[in-house]
Length: 122
Image (tube, one colour):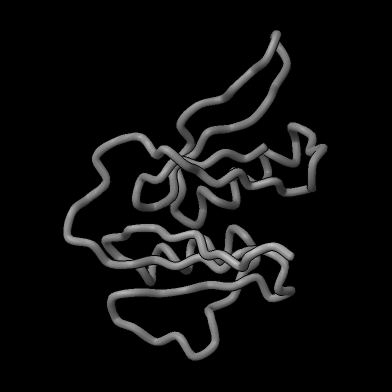
């Protein structure tokens, strides 16, 4: 059996970042978690890991060593679906960074969340 685990983000505004990622991933606030310096979201179906956001005094200064890939339609997502999802996430506060192509074929979009953490839509 796999070990349950949590993905943790450092944050300037943990509740704002938690709200962004909850909307991006279809997660909900973790029941019973109430902390002014932290927030936690969970997969309502219980399949994905919990994600926590903890207030830290320093801002982000370098590229992430680990990042999230948002897969809006599962393992085989078409370009139009990826671009639609990117537009939705921009409306929530994300920014577009780059478009990746492989041998001239569209691969994925690189984005940043509201605090500058890189993620991909693939």
